Image: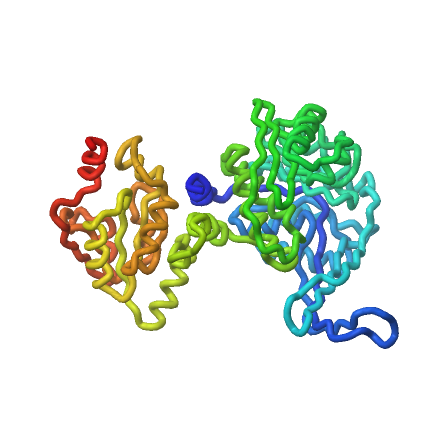
Length: 496
């Protein structure tokens, strides 16, 4: 998971354009109390109504929560639901200029009724759809094409979210592909179900699920080989850079034009609701590609995000913090138990944890290092650091950061292993990872009361010392135990 941690840390804020069917999702929650006396149906006593964005606008919402700068192109009605969808989009800072109003069709709405049994265990009982599936008119299509070309000039990737509600016409998709190709940006399609995928010709890639891919290729997809064959057929038939088939709990299959043919598995999850999982995969995959990632890590990251999505009820967002926490906890799960798993945090989540500690009156000590091969000198050092305050934060260099400092042969232990060992120590309260050459940005975010470094440093050489002292914090130079050095230890191991 080390490379995925570094990918999340380097995602930045790509500009992502989502073209597709904009929808409003409405949820009615309540307790399923008994069988109705009028008919053999469950009686739901409603207590909560909630509205979220769905369809292509759900993909946009997920992208925005993941830190992208997001725009949408699609259609809403001139009804109250259309007004509400626009209002939610703009409230989330999503560019809704491309949400074209069409007075001749209703806004697509999916209304879900969620029942709880004995006030717990919510389950979706029924979904009611309000929509038009007719293709948009020529006039609306022309308006969409104009705004689409304009928005593509400003984006890093185009995601097509086709729910077969009339927006993703063959002509509009051709416009998207041609305009994107002229700018050298990818077009990734999440296709609708059906046998004819010719309208997606020229896209960079697409992400049908196993049923959709099976219908499009006239195959039954049961095994990994079936999935790879379908992905390759879609790639070759449609001129894609890469064919991809999503396989729900079995991960994703990739057949790239450069010869790569791989199935990327995903780990088992507690599945509460699969709604929105495909959109989350699409959003994360597209974001990673837009940030410069290759297909392999982008797919693996999308697997993680999709897995987190199915652990939630309904169409929900997943944040970078949640993805990072899941990645950082992976070695604990692999070990069969979770010692110290709650100690490992991405920086934003760590800051929130420290705020809660400080509200209780606690002080914070901070130190950092590579901690490649942990030895007794490290343990003594961390104990002294912990003694300076009520809790200790240890920031650990990422693998790439260690290589920059120590050379191409280091670290010997990957970041997940190093974080695992540190989190298992009693004196360590929090572990976070940083990818920069220095921890300056982490120190500025944490604002420790005590900054701790080894006594082999002079205070004037300690990164962050001036900053910490500027607000009344102090710098502590911890003693070092003689005879212990990671470099010397590695040399002795090699000699042995």
